Amino acid sequence: MENKIKGVYLVTDRPLCLHHNLAEVVRLAALGGVSLVQLREKEADSRTFLELAKHLKEILKPFSVPLLINDRLDICLAAGADGVHLGQSDLPWWEARRILGEKVIIGLSLETKEDYFSLIHNDPKPPLHYLAISPVFDTDTKTNTKPAWGLTGVRWLKNETHLPIVAIGGIKESNAADVIQAGADSLAVVSAICSAKDPKSATESLSKKFHSLKE
Amino acid sequence: MENKIKGVYLVTDRPLCLHHNLAEVVRLAALGGVSLVQLREKEADSRTFLELAKHLKEILKPFSVPLLINDRLDICLAAGADGVHLGQSDLPWWEARRILGEKVIIGLSLETKEDYFSLIHNDPKPPLHYLAISPVFDTDTKTNTKPAWGLTGVRWLKNETHLPIVAIGGIKESNAADVIQAGADSLAVVSAICSAKDPKSATESLSKKFHSLKE
Image (cartoon, rainbow over all chains, first blue to last red; front, side, top):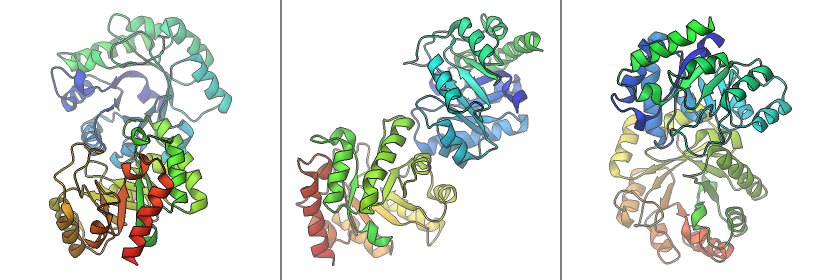
């Protein structure tokens, strides 16, 4: 599973899909070698969210790319998705693990060092598949985020944990190498793929950069 | 379980809790004889929603009043609530039944006759605990609702189904008797309790009216 996490990780944002609809962005990202897709829907009603999740699951299946659901355990269960991505104001990871079982992927966002300390305080080996460090850089995509971690933050977390680190927030072609060299195991991007005219080549190019530096 | 559904059914709305906080409104409604409480949170993040659900569950436990969660199956599972109330744009009831198991209460809102026909078309005996007819009267509480069913609609549904009917939308002291006589098995109210200066006596008074006409 760890291999699935490493690489380019697409977090969806429908309003940012400027040149193609969401399904097409996801299909093109899969063709471009995306390793993981997270469906993030903060405005959709549950029925729409579920339909989108089922549709993306179908698109990703032939590529064996796992689909994660942001926040909503029930959508994950109903859509047969591969896991969930949890933020600090989502359901606690231990409830998610209890409800979803042992097999699903659960990733957790850390916005501050305190988030990390309270995590390891609870349990020295939390059954999580990755930690997302968010945001690495300032970004317009998500509002109300805490101050950016910067590359220093990525280096710090890499030193602290053996869990794969997903870097998210303001990552693009031009800073990807720095983020990988600081210790990220996965580059999560929103607009760099969603808003690209050619999501396939945007993914390919990030993915090439990742693999050339990481392997 | 049917007995639990019959009576006065409180649907929560935090912004409408004008004189007491939500937990206190629920406690006072329980003291006043409410038969069922539905926690409805359209704006809260998942963590806040869960904390509220757990808190209300604790308040209602000594009264043996079931707590239902609006829409969110995952909150129901995490909080150990007694069931869910589903609208037409929430997850489908068959997914809810599959995910939540046989024991939990599942109620479904019908906004139009077509909603009812598509329900009985799918399965002549859907494993639901009640049908909510919504809205019976026009109301300011919920926006984007379909045209009101009116008392004619309640009579029509009563004639169609053996499932308990929860009437919701614009129900208050002054029209409660008409709604009961039209066939409602439960009076769902939002502002009539949430915004009451004395939620206990508001509940008591609706409950007395219900039981005097229904038993």
